[in-house]
Length: 222
Image (cartoon, rainbow, N blue to C red; front, side, top):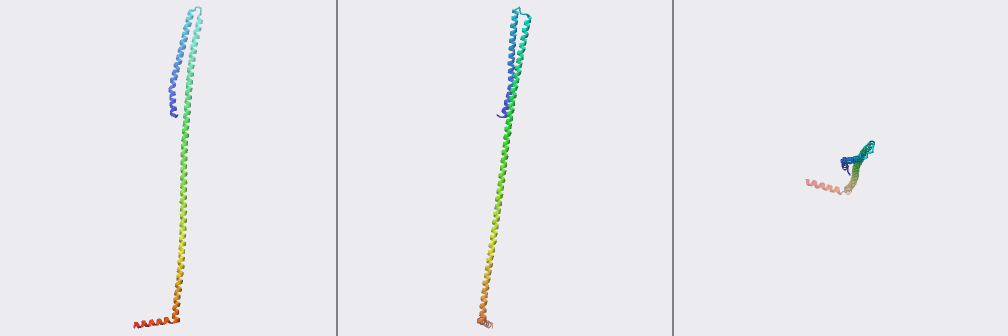
């Protein structure tokens, strides 16, 4: 049952209430008219009886008339009281129905507010969870990138160190090979020098060969 249905029912009650009051007033008027007719009939009967019996005094007739008038007034007063009571009961019922409708509307509004608050809380929680997950993802990505950079720097440093060590080792090998080559060349030169020294000084073969070559050169020039 929504608020519109409640308001429709309240409007329906407001439309029915005047009809009920009118019906009650008609009924009460019928009752009053009937009572008045009964009283008039009773009065007429009493007058006829009085006319029939001459022995009844005029004071008795007056008393009977006064009693009948009082009875009529009492009946009218009772009818008015009944009408007032009926109207008060109907007003009370209308007030109760209106209060119940107001209470239902307030409850519905509170339910709507609670539902809206729940929706807001759910949306806020989803936004917070999304922000937390996004922040966690960003942190993880940053950590992965930092670790990759650290690994890349370490690998690059290790490669540079390996290259430097290899270059140093190669240079040391080249230096050692060059030194060995120089030593070998020096030793060979020394061997040739000692050999030529031996030939020139000790055996005289080189001196004779030199003199023969000089003689040939001189002869060919001449």
